[in-house]
Image (tube, rainbow, N blue to C red):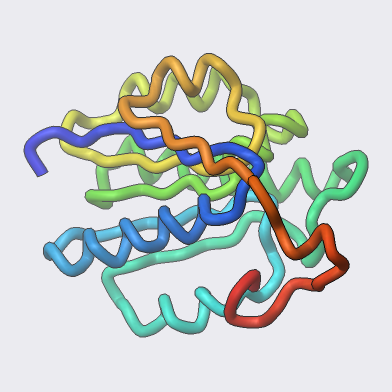
Length: 171
């Protein structure tokens, strides 16, 4: 890629991570290398199984076995800090063509990572690296920084009828 851009997939609708993973698969189809950092996620999701089939994709989770419900614990904060330290180093070293920061907006929302640190790393990324950020509650500063912003808006969701998450669809 000659010039890499910054994508942001945000909003309260379903599909942010799915869109990022679809882009990751497209990127490896074009011969690119991909690093996916999942912040706030430590549970097993079905995409983890399929992504193991692609050696061009490296995926690391920097979260616990459950999603933050009310207030983050020190363990949540520590996991995110470790993840950000590793991921920001990977971005600075220019080791991958595409880097996905999955749920980074949630990590920012819960103050697990400082916004100024993320903006600083994005500012210093190499010209050719493509970066995708996902998650609800994207701060205005990230929206302003991104080259492409897509908001997933929930219009209707079966969760509201009591339907629980289904393997292969939601996880």
